[in-house]
Image (tube, rainbow, N blue to C red):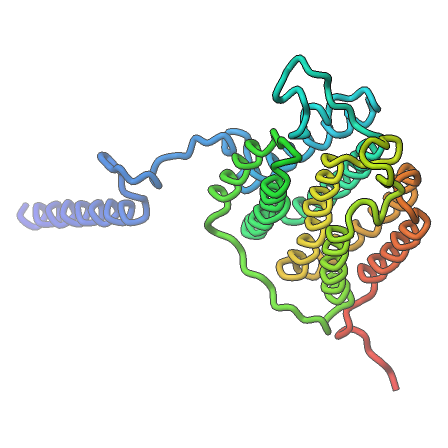
Length: 342
């Protein structure tokens, strides 16, 4: 009977040891239970972006697009209303009704309406370009955060700086929503941003095109800001601002300033961002989409603006030239893949 008892005891001890080893293995593989932990990283995040099934970077991108579309629709409705619109009375800082509500309202001049038409159509092009770039970065979170940080500079930052410069001419009621959007983009994209790619201009024609576009647009922005609206449009104030039939008011000139500073600069920053942060495939797709946008601008938007520009035919030719350059840059293979046979 003694050997049998020893066998039972040895079997019981081995079973106990194996059970302890299994418990230790499970405890090592599973995370410890946080009974009284106060670490916020161990608690689930109940934010609006997670409730919508999006990351904070994706949520801030959607909000940025929505606010831009809201401002664009406001200008579009005002242009459709024509001379009876109250846009100038609501947005120009020198409107008589700001001081005295019983005073006559401030109406927009034909020159103001022409600038507003160009502004909303340019804003539409910028929103389409930003949407395409956002979709190219959507599936890669660090890249999308870099793109959102670029939006902090332009159009959000340039809009706020422009409103400060034009505070005597524009009321800018949208500056509060822009400040809230600025805080949202900073807080949502402060950490985890991706790194930029090294620039190799000899690698492909798309790199050369993006670099050249950044240079050309920087010149165009400076030129349009320095020369002003009267150097590019048909509107003149030869008889003073009382000649409303062919004049752009102070508020209209401020809208021109904001259009160049925000919309034109946004396209320049998009080319700069693509040059530094997008990979080869994304650069080609972006340039292909920009080529299609140039066709839309040349054959749809510019015919609607022919009563505004001094040389609409020249602008249409320039748009077609950009179309061929963008399409060629998107389709031509990289230089290092071209083999010259002797």
